[in-house]
Amino acid sequence: MKNVLILLRTNFRTSYNSLAKNKKLRPIFAISIGVAGLVAFYLLLKLSRFLYNLKIPLVDISLAPLILNIVMLVAFIYLLLGSFSIMLSTLYFSSDTMLLLSLPLKERDVFSGRFVFTVFEESIWLFFLMYPFFVGYGIVNQANMIFYAETLLFVLLFPVIPLTVAAFVILPLAKKIHPRKLQIIIMIINVVFGILFFGIMQIANPAYQIVGKDALTNLFSHGFSLMRFLPTNIGVYFTISLAERNILIGTSVFTIYLVISAGLFYLCTILSLSTYKEGLGKIRTAQYVKIVKRKTEKEFKGFSFLPTKIKAIAEKDVKMIRRDQKLSVSILPIIAYLAVFFFIFVVVLGKKSLGNESFDLSSFMLLFFFVFSSYMASLQIAPMLFYTESRSVWVLFASKITSQELLWSKFVIPFLLGEAMNALFFILMIFVRHPSINMIFVSVGLALFLPFIFSTIGVSTSAMFPIFREVKSPKKIIPGKVVLIQTVMGYAMFGIAFGFFFLNRLFIKIWGGTIAGIAIFVLVGILSFVVGFSLMSAGSRRLKYVEIQ
Image 1 (cartoon, rainbow, N blue to C red):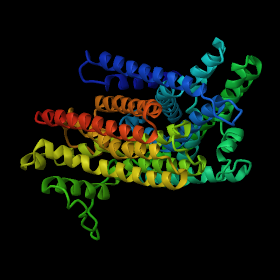
Image 2: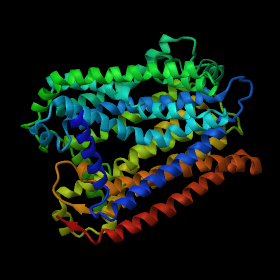
Image 3: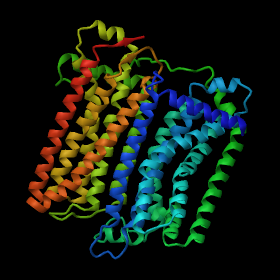
Image 4: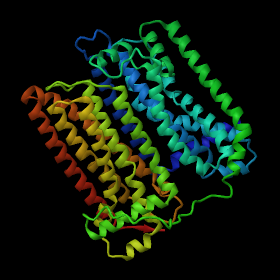
């Protein structure tokens, strides 16, 4: 236990020191993270209270349990899919893992320290993005302090079960399969697992009809059928019990959840004794992946419409993605998340025709999918593509390429990928949801302009901290401050996009659905171009002062 605490303290110090090289700037960045998190917490709290007070015609049931179901379901799926990659990277590919194993430490202590710190990292964003919905539910129902304390502990320990499930899969497989090869297998499993997960749960409970005229009523009457099979169902049950002053029942159910989580973690530590060391032994002699051009590789010529220099760099990036295993594997989780969320949209939400002037909770969820798709496809990929130039920095700056041409060339792939994802999502929405004219204009505005602004954020913020040096993986060179800035700006764009939801409701009351949709489309376009071009201009000016190491 003492060694585990020492490892945790070391990890905390390392994370804090990574915020900035300058010691004086570290507290500023830490405070900035806290302020940004509190702002997001407050906005989501206001949103949760607004949603809990909504009334759905012809459906005599409270919205609160369903909203809690949705929030925990999304968080659980996101954690479950991401936990495989997270645990594989944390346990086997951390830069100091080999150093720790050379010290007089047991593999069980190293595993426990890694696992607990990973739970802490995941619980931070859960606190800011998930806990506000519990607080809002407590405020609406005038809950006591026991409710807030137990729900807070539930949220902080929420990642334990998904991470233990991943550990049970990763540890035995890494013992038999090289962890590098296991990365690709895990990404494929993520997509297949996500689709099968929903399919099996729906077949297991035919009471919830996926498609039909009464789909929405069934959704509110029965809830998500898979919830009864997930630990999130425990969260909803004990939350409602505590809010209704059934302290004994709620606390008992919560205690059962704690026992299950602790038991799974203990079993993982036992499993690590016989598997963790063998898995690490497979990567001792292979610390890097060579980039080898395939003899049968076809030339990519899909950017003929671009200017010559921008086209050349964009085509080079496509070749890099196809050749570099590490870079392509870094992009696979993004594709996996999007594929699963598309499946959620088609299968879970079902069919429902929106009225001509309708812009309700269902529409709000549609907007979330557009924003999430743009965020994952554009903002997550742009920094990795920018920092691929660390490998060929001398060639780049010896050529006659301006900083603006470099930035716009890095803008192309994440922008087109985001547009492709949103186009697919928009087609699904047209055929599955039959949206109103208002919803079509709003959706087109978000689908068209969000990838633009997210791509410019990803490229320009990376250019503001242009540290180039030789590195095995471009993902490892991304400074912590860049990740922080992009995360804060990403959440800000989430808030602004949802702000258009409420603005659209106001415009509908004033001008009607069609004109309101056109107005939102124009406003989103103006905001995107103003913010996007301003950021690219700032990044271009900053890129002139490059530190080459």
